[in-house]
Length: 420
Image (tube, rainbow, N blue to C red; front, top):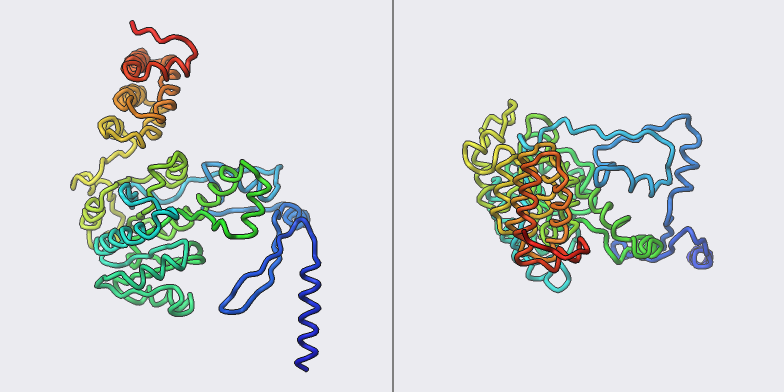
Protein backbone atom coordinates (compact mmCIF):
# COMPACT_ATOMS: atom_id res chain seq x y z
CA UNK A 1 0.00 0.00 0.00
CA UNK A 2 0.98 3.64 -0.29
CA UNK A 3 1.18 4.00 3.51
CA UNK A 4 3.39 0.94 3.76
CA UNK A 5 5.68 2.23 1.01
CA UNK A 6 5.99 5.64 2.72
CA UNK A 7 6.83 4.00 6.05
CA UNK A 8 9.46 1.83 4.40
CA UNK A 9 10.92 4.84 2.62
CA UNK A 10 11.00 6.81 5.89
CA UNK A 11 12.83 3.94 7.59
CA UNK A 12 15.40 3.84 4.77
CA UNK A 13 15.95 7.59 5.11
CA UNK A 14 16.41 7.25 8.88
CA UNK A 15 18.97 4.49 8.35
CA UNK A 16 20.79 6.64 5.81
CA UNK A 17 20.90 9.71 8.07
CA UNK A 18 22.13 7.70 11.07
CA UNK A 19 25.16 6.35 9.20
CA UNK A 20 28.46 7.72 10.42
CA UNK A 21 31.21 6.04 8.42
CA UNK A 22 34.19 8.43 8.40
CA UNK A 23 35.38 6.92 5.11
CA UNK A 24 32.25 8.11 3.34
CA UNK A 25 30.51 11.37 2.48
CA UNK A 26 26.71 11.52 2.73
CA UNK A 27 24.84 14.15 0.78
CA UNK A 28 21.70 15.04 -1.18
CA UNK A 29 21.63 15.73 -4.92
CA UNK A 30 18.95 16.69 -7.40
CA UNK A 31 18.24 14.57 -10.47
CA UNK A 32 15.63 15.78 -12.97
CA UNK A 33 13.40 17.18 -10.25
CA UNK A 34 13.90 14.24 -7.89
CA UNK A 35 15.94 14.31 -4.68
CA UNK A 36 18.58 11.62 -4.23
CA UNK A 37 20.43 10.60 -1.07
CA UNK A 38 23.97 9.55 -1.92
CA UNK A 39 26.89 7.93 -0.16
CA UNK A 40 30.38 8.00 -1.70
CA UNK A 41 33.78 6.75 -0.60
CA UNK A 42 36.30 9.52 0.05
CA UNK A 43 39.29 7.21 -0.37
CA UNK A 44 39.25 4.09 -2.53
CA UNK A 45 42.64 2.69 -1.48
CA UNK A 46 41.33 -0.10 0.75
CA UNK A 47 38.64 -1.14 -1.72
CA UNK A 48 41.16 -1.22 -4.57
CA UNK A 49 43.65 -3.29 -2.56
CA UNK A 50 40.89 -5.76 -1.73
CA UNK A 51 39.97 -5.99 -5.41
CA UNK A 52 43.46 -6.62 -6.80
CA UNK A 53 44.41 -9.03 -3.99
CA UNK A 54 42.30 -11.64 -5.79
CA UNK A 55 44.67 -11.70 -8.78
CA UNK A 56 48.28 -12.72 -9.31
CA UNK A 57 48.90 -9.82 -11.66
CA UNK A 58 47.01 -6.74 -12.77
CA UNK A 59 47.64 -4.65 -15.88
CA UNK A 60 46.36 -1.08 -15.92
CA UNK A 61 46.62 0.67 -19.25
CA UNK A 62 45.20 3.87 -20.67
CA UNK A 63 46.28 6.76 -22.86
CA UNK A 64 45.74 9.15 -19.95
CA UNK A 65 46.79 7.45 -16.70
CA UNK A 66 49.85 9.67 -16.29
CA UNK A 67 49.66 13.24 -15.01
CA UNK A 68 52.62 15.59 -15.24
CA UNK A 69 54.72 12.87 -16.88
CA UNK A 70 54.40 10.34 -14.03
CA UNK A 71 51.94 8.05 -12.24
CA UNK A 72 52.21 9.70 -8.80
CA UNK A 73 48.61 10.89 -8.77
CA UNK A 74 47.26 7.46 -9.69
CA UNK A 75 49.49 5.72 -7.14
CA UNK A 76 48.40 8.05 -4.36
CA UNK A 77 44.71 7.75 -5.20
CA UNK A 78 44.74 3.94 -5.43
CA UNK A 79 47.32 3.29 -2.72
CA UNK A 80 49.47 1.04 -4.91
CA UNK A 81 53.20 0.85 -4.29
CA UNK A 82 54.87 -2.28 -5.63
CA UNK A 83 54.41 -2.35 -9.38
CA UNK A 84 56.29 -1.76 -12.61
CA UNK A 85 55.42 1.34 -14.57
CA UNK A 86 56.09 2.47 -18.11
CA UNK A 87 55.01 5.42 -20.22
CA UNK A 88 54.88 4.62 -23.94
CA UNK A 89 54.81 7.43 -26.46
CA UNK A 90 51.77 8.10 -28.63
CA UNK A 91 51.68 6.36 -32.02
CA UNK A 92 50.48 9.67 -33.48
CA UNK A 93 52.76 12.55 -34.44
CA UNK A 94 50.81 15.55 -33.20
CA UNK A 95 53.31 18.05 -34.58
CA UNK A 96 52.67 16.67 -38.06
CA UNK A 97 48.96 16.03 -37.65
CA UNK A 98 47.56 18.74 -35.40
CA UNK A 99 47.66 22.27 -34.05
CA UNK A 100 46.98 23.66 -30.57
CA UNK A 101 45.43 27.11 -30.22
CA UNK A 102 45.72 28.71 -26.78
CA UNK A 103 43.88 31.99 -26.32
CA UNK A 104 45.86 34.76 -24.62
CA UNK A 105 43.41 37.66 -24.83
CA UNK A 106 40.09 36.51 -23.36
CA UNK A 107 39.11 37.56 -19.81
CA UNK A 108 39.87 35.10 -17.04
CA UNK A 109 36.98 32.63 -16.66
CA UNK A 110 36.60 33.33 -12.95
CA UNK A 111 33.50 34.30 -11.00
CA UNK A 112 34.10 38.03 -11.38
CA UNK A 113 34.53 37.86 -15.17
CA UNK A 114 32.27 34.93 -16.00
CA UNK A 115 29.61 36.88 -17.91
CA UNK A 116 32.05 38.79 -20.10
CA UNK A 117 34.13 35.62 -20.59
CA UNK A 118 31.07 33.80 -21.92
CA UNK A 119 30.25 36.65 -24.30
CA UNK A 120 33.79 37.12 -25.62
CA UNK A 121 34.62 33.42 -25.85
CA UNK A 122 31.43 32.92 -27.88
CA UNK A 123 32.91 35.17 -30.58
CA UNK A 124 36.13 33.15 -30.64
CA UNK A 125 34.19 29.87 -30.82
CA UNK A 126 32.28 31.16 -33.84
CA UNK A 127 35.53 32.14 -35.61
CA UNK A 128 37.11 28.77 -34.87
CA UNK A 129 34.05 26.80 -36.03
CA UNK A 130 33.94 28.82 -39.25
CA UNK A 131 37.66 28.07 -39.74
CA UNK A 132 37.10 24.33 -39.54
CA UNK A 133 33.83 24.53 -41.51
CA UNK A 134 31.96 22.88 -38.68
CA UNK A 135 33.15 19.35 -37.84
CA UNK A 136 33.61 20.53 -34.25
CA UNK A 137 33.12 19.21 -30.74
CA UNK A 138 32.84 21.95 -28.10
CA UNK A 139 33.44 20.74 -24.54
CA UNK A 140 32.15 22.63 -21.50
CA UNK A 141 32.59 22.21 -17.76
CA UNK A 142 29.04 23.32 -16.93
CA UNK A 143 25.57 23.05 -18.45
CA UNK A 144 25.02 26.73 -17.75
CA UNK A 145 27.84 27.72 -20.12
CA UNK A 146 26.70 25.15 -22.68
CA UNK A 147 23.16 26.52 -22.68
CA UNK A 148 24.44 30.10 -23.02
CA UNK A 149 26.36 29.15 -26.17
CA UNK A 150 23.51 27.03 -27.53
CA UNK A 151 21.07 29.93 -27.10
CA UNK A 152 23.33 32.63 -28.55
CA UNK A 153 25.68 31.17 -31.15
CA UNK A 154 24.94 32.10 -34.76
CA UNK A 155 26.62 29.72 -37.21
CA UNK A 156 25.75 28.34 -40.64
CA UNK A 157 26.40 24.75 -39.61
CA UNK A 158 23.96 22.25 -38.06
CA UNK A 159 24.50 21.91 -34.33
CA UNK A 160 23.00 20.11 -31.38
CA UNK A 161 23.56 20.20 -27.64
CA UNK A 162 23.89 17.44 -25.09
CA UNK A 163 20.37 16.75 -23.85
CA UNK A 164 18.71 17.22 -27.24
CA UNK A 165 18.63 13.43 -27.59
CA UNK A 166 20.21 10.39 -25.86
CA UNK A 167 24.04 10.38 -26.01
CA UNK A 168 24.33 7.43 -28.40
CA UNK A 169 21.88 8.99 -30.86
CA UNK A 170 23.62 12.35 -30.51
CA UNK A 171 26.97 10.85 -31.47
CA UNK A 172 25.39 9.02 -34.39
CA UNK A 173 23.75 12.27 -35.55
CA UNK A 174 27.15 13.96 -35.45
CA UNK A 175 28.73 11.18 -37.52
CA UNK A 176 25.90 11.17 -40.06
CA UNK A 177 25.59 14.95 -40.48
CA UNK A 178 28.14 16.77 -42.64
CA UNK A 179 29.96 19.75 -41.09
CA UNK A 180 28.04 19.39 -37.84
CA UNK A 181 28.82 20.90 -34.43
CA UNK A 182 28.20 19.19 -31.10
CA UNK A 183 28.06 21.09 -27.79
CA UNK A 184 28.69 18.76 -24.87
CA UNK A 185 29.86 18.35 -21.30
CA UNK A 186 30.40 15.65 -18.65
CA UNK A 187 30.65 12.18 -20.26
CA UNK A 188 31.57 13.55 -23.70
CA UNK A 189 35.01 14.53 -22.37
CA UNK A 190 35.96 10.86 -22.55
CA UNK A 191 35.04 7.60 -24.16
CA UNK A 192 33.58 8.80 -27.47
CA UNK A 193 35.28 7.73 -30.69
CA UNK A 194 34.67 9.78 -33.84
CA UNK A 195 37.17 8.87 -36.55
CA UNK A 196 38.06 10.58 -39.79
CA UNK A 197 37.39 14.10 -40.99
CA UNK A 198 33.96 14.19 -39.31
CA UNK A 199 35.75 15.67 -36.29
CA UNK A 200 38.46 18.20 -37.10
CA UNK A 201 38.21 20.67 -34.23
CA UNK A 202 37.89 20.24 -30.46
CA UNK A 203 37.19 23.43 -28.51
CA UNK A 204 37.74 23.31 -24.75
CA UNK A 205 35.96 26.26 -23.16
CA UNK A 206 37.54 26.07 -19.68
CA UNK A 207 40.13 23.96 -17.90
CA UNK A 208 38.20 21.05 -16.35
CA UNK A 209 38.84 21.71 -12.68
CA UNK A 210 36.39 19.89 -10.41
CA UNK A 211 33.41 21.81 -9.09
CA UNK A 212 34.17 23.21 -5.61
CA UNK A 213 30.55 22.40 -4.71
CA UNK A 214 31.08 18.64 -5.09
CA UNK A 215 30.81 17.18 -1.53
CA UNK A 216 33.27 14.33 -2.21
CA UNK A 217 35.79 16.71 -3.76
CA UNK A 218 35.37 19.10 -0.82
CA UNK A 219 36.15 16.36 1.68
CA UNK A 220 39.18 15.15 -0.26
CA UNK A 221 40.50 18.72 -0.40
CA UNK A 222 39.89 19.17 3.33
CA UNK A 223 41.94 16.09 4.15
CA UNK A 224 44.83 17.24 1.97
CA UNK A 225 44.86 20.68 3.66
CA UNK A 226 47.22 23.09 1.86
CA UNK A 227 48.32 20.34 -0.54
CA UNK A 228 44.87 20.09 -2.14
CA UNK A 229 45.70 21.95 -5.35
CA UNK A 230 48.96 20.26 -6.30
CA UNK A 231 47.94 16.76 -5.21
CA UNK A 232 44.30 16.69 -6.29
CA UNK A 233 42.87 19.65 -8.22
CA UNK A 234 45.69 20.08 -10.76
CA UNK A 235 46.43 16.42 -11.61
CA UNK A 236 42.70 15.66 -11.85
CA UNK A 237 42.23 18.55 -14.28
CA UNK A 238 45.24 17.42 -16.34
CA UNK A 239 43.85 13.89 -16.68
CA UNK A 240 40.44 15.12 -17.83
CA UNK A 241 41.98 17.71 -20.18
CA UNK A 242 44.06 14.99 -21.81
CA UNK A 243 40.89 12.94 -22.21
CA UNK A 244 39.19 15.84 -23.97
CA UNK A 245 42.32 16.48 -26.05
CA UNK A 246 42.30 12.84 -27.09
CA UNK A 247 38.92 13.14 -28.79
CA UNK A 248 40.64 14.70 -31.82
CA UNK A 249 43.29 12.41 -33.32
CA UNK A 250 42.11 8.80 -33.48
CA UNK A 251 44.28 7.57 -36.36
CA UNK A 252 47.57 8.20 -38.18
CA UNK A 253 45.79 9.77 -41.18
CA UNK A 254 43.71 12.24 -39.19
CA UNK A 255 44.30 15.97 -38.88
CA UNK A 256 42.79 18.74 -36.82
CA UNK A 257 43.12 21.40 -34.15
CA UNK A 258 42.45 21.69 -30.45
CA UNK A 259 41.53 25.12 -29.09
CA UNK A 260 41.68 25.97 -25.38
CA UNK A 261 39.99 29.26 -24.50
CA UNK A 262 41.07 29.39 -20.86
CA UNK A 263 43.76 32.08 -20.49
CA UNK A 264 44.90 30.62 -17.16
CA UNK A 265 47.20 28.49 -19.32
CA UNK A 266 49.32 31.60 -19.94
CA UNK A 267 48.58 33.73 -16.86
CA UNK A 268 48.99 31.17 -14.07
CA UNK A 269 52.19 29.44 -13.01
CA UNK A 270 50.58 26.01 -13.32
CA UNK A 271 49.69 26.67 -16.96
CA UNK A 272 53.07 25.48 -18.18
CA UNK A 273 52.69 22.25 -16.19
CA UNK A 274 49.39 21.60 -17.93
CA UNK A 275 50.72 22.35 -21.42
CA UNK A 276 53.78 20.15 -20.86
CA UNK A 277 51.43 17.27 -20.00
CA UNK A 278 49.85 17.43 -23.46
CA UNK A 279 51.39 15.78 -26.55
CA UNK A 280 54.17 17.74 -28.27
CA UNK A 281 52.37 19.91 -30.76
CA UNK A 282 52.72 23.20 -32.63
CA UNK A 283 51.14 26.00 -30.58
CA UNK A 284 49.61 29.23 -31.90
CA UNK A 285 47.79 32.12 -30.24
CA UNK A 286 46.11 33.73 -33.24
CA UNK A 287 42.82 32.55 -34.76
CA UNK A 288 44.16 33.53 -38.19
CA UNK A 289 46.80 30.83 -37.79
CA UNK A 290 44.05 28.28 -37.16
CA UNK A 291 42.33 29.42 -40.36
CA UNK A 292 45.60 29.05 -42.27
CA UNK A 293 46.06 25.61 -40.75
CA UNK A 294 42.70 24.33 -42.02
CA UNK A 295 43.24 25.98 -45.41
CA UNK A 296 46.60 24.19 -45.63
CA UNK A 297 45.22 20.69 -45.15
CA UNK A 298 44.86 18.98 -48.55
CA UNK A 299 41.37 17.68 -49.29
CA UNK A 300 42.83 14.18 -49.57
CA UNK A 301 44.81 14.39 -46.32
CA UNK A 302 42.49 12.03 -44.45
CA UNK A 303 43.02 9.36 -47.12
CA UNK A 304 46.79 9.28 -46.92
CA UNK A 305 49.49 10.30 -44.49
CA UNK A 306 50.53 13.93 -44.91
CA UNK A 307 53.16 15.84 -42.92
CA UNK A 308 51.09 18.89 -42.02
CA UNK A 309 54.05 20.53 -40.27
CA UNK A 310 55.79 20.80 -43.66
CA UNK A 311 52.68 22.31 -45.22
CA UNK A 312 52.48 24.77 -42.34
CA UNK A 313 56.13 25.68 -42.74
CA UNK A 314 55.57 26.44 -46.43
CA UNK A 315 52.49 28.50 -45.60
CA UNK A 316 54.33 30.32 -42.82
CA UNK A 317 51.87 29.43 -40.08
CA UNK A 318 54.32 28.02 -37.51
CA UNK A 319 57.95 27.06 -37.29
CA UNK A 320 58.73 23.63 -38.69
CA UNK A 321 60.47 22.76 -35.41
CA UNK A 322 58.41 24.00 -32.48
CA UNK A 323 61.23 22.98 -30.14
CA UNK A 324 64.06 24.30 -32.31
CA UNK A 325 66.50 27.18 -32.39
CA UNK A 326 64.08 29.50 -34.17
CA UNK A 327 61.59 28.95 -31.39
CA UNK A 328 64.09 30.05 -28.74
CA UNK A 329 64.92 33.19 -30.69
CA UNK A 330 61.22 33.98 -31.16
CA UNK A 331 60.59 33.56 -27.44
CA UNK A 332 63.37 36.02 -26.64
CA UNK A 333 61.78 38.58 -28.95
CA UNK A 334 58.25 37.98 -27.66
CA UNK A 335 58.40 40.57 -24.89
CA UNK A 336 56.08 38.20 -23.03
CA UNK A 337 56.97 37.13 -19.45
CA UNK A 338 54.60 34.16 -19.63
CA UNK A 339 57.08 32.59 -22.07
CA UNK A 340 59.82 32.42 -19.41
CA UNK A 341 58.88 28.86 -18.27
CA UNK A 342 59.21 27.61 -21.86
CA UNK A 343 62.58 29.35 -22.24
CA UNK A 344 63.73 27.74 -18.99
CA UNK A 345 62.92 24.36 -20.56
CA UNK A 346 65.40 25.16 -23.31
CA UNK A 347 68.12 25.81 -20.70
CA UNK A 348 67.94 22.04 -20.02
CA UNK A 349 68.22 21.06 -23.69
CA UNK A 350 70.91 18.60 -24.77
CA UNK A 351 71.70 21.06 -27.58
CA UNK A 352 74.33 23.58 -26.46
CA UNK A 353 73.22 26.16 -29.04
CA UNK A 354 69.68 26.08 -27.65
CA UNK A 355 70.99 26.52 -24.09
CA UNK A 356 73.08 29.50 -25.21
CA UNK A 357 70.16 31.17 -26.98
CA UNK A 358 67.88 30.43 -24.01
CA UNK A 359 70.31 32.26 -21.73
CA UNK A 360 70.26 35.24 -24.08
CA UNK A 361 66.45 35.16 -24.25
CA UNK A 362 66.16 35.20 -20.45
CA UNK A 363 68.38 38.28 -20.37
CA UNK A 364 66.08 40.07 -22.83
CA UNK A 365 63.06 39.40 -20.62
CA UNK A 366 64.87 40.63 -17.52
CA UNK A 367 62.56 43.44 -16.49
CA UNK A 368 59.59 41.25 -15.62
CA UNK A 369 58.85 40.34 -12.00
CA UNK A 370 58.21 37.91 -10.34
CA UNK A 371 58.96 35.60 -13.28
CA UNK A 372 62.59 36.68 -13.25
CA UNK A 373 63.26 34.75 -10.02
CA UNK A 374 63.05 31.41 -11.84
CA UNK A 375 64.98 32.85 -14.78
CA UNK A 376 67.91 33.79 -12.54
CA UNK A 377 67.97 30.34 -10.94
CA UNK A 378 68.24 28.78 -14.41
CA UNK A 379 70.97 31.19 -15.48
CA UNK A 380 72.98 30.38 -12.34
CA UNK A 381 72.79 26.72 -13.30
CA UNK A 382 74.06 27.57 -16.80
CA UNK A 383 77.12 29.26 -15.28
CA UNK A 384 78.40 25.71 -14.67
CA UNK A 385 77.53 24.45 -18.16
CA UNK A 386 80.06 22.28 -20.01
CA UNK A 387 79.97 24.62 -23.03
CA UNK A 388 82.06 27.81 -22.65
CA UNK A 389 79.71 29.79 -24.91
CA UNK A 390 76.72 28.81 -22.79
CA UNK A 391 78.52 29.97 -19.61
CA UNK A 392 79.45 33.22 -21.35
CA UNK A 393 75.87 33.97 -22.46
CA UNK A 394 74.50 33.08 -19.02
CA UNK A 395 76.92 35.51 -17.37
CA UNK A 396 76.05 38.18 -19.94
CA UNK A 397 72.34 37.68 -19.24
CA UNK A 398 72.86 37.92 -15.48
CA UNK A 399 74.78 41.15 -15.95
CA UNK A 400 71.97 42.49 -18.10
CA UNK A 401 69.43 41.56 -15.46
CA UNK A 402 71.59 43.19 -12.81
CA UNK A 403 71.06 46.60 -14.40
CA UNK A 404 67.40 46.62 -13.34
CA UNK A 405 67.21 43.74 -10.85
CA UNK A 406 70.31 44.04 -8.69
CA UNK A 407 68.35 43.57 -5.48
CA UNK A 408 66.75 40.36 -6.80
CA UNK A 409 70.11 38.80 -7.67
CA UNK A 410 71.48 39.66 -4.23
CA UNK A 411 68.39 38.15 -2.62
CA UNK A 412 68.74 34.87 -4.51
CA UNK A 413 72.50 34.32 -4.29
CA UNK A 414 72.78 35.94 -0.82
CA UNK A 415 75.80 38.06 -1.64
CA UNK A 416 76.39 41.53 -3.09
CA UNK A 417 76.20 41.71 -6.85
CA UNK A 418 79.28 43.29 -8.41
CA UNK A 419 79.32 44.06 -12.10
CA UNK A 420 82.71 43.54 -13.79
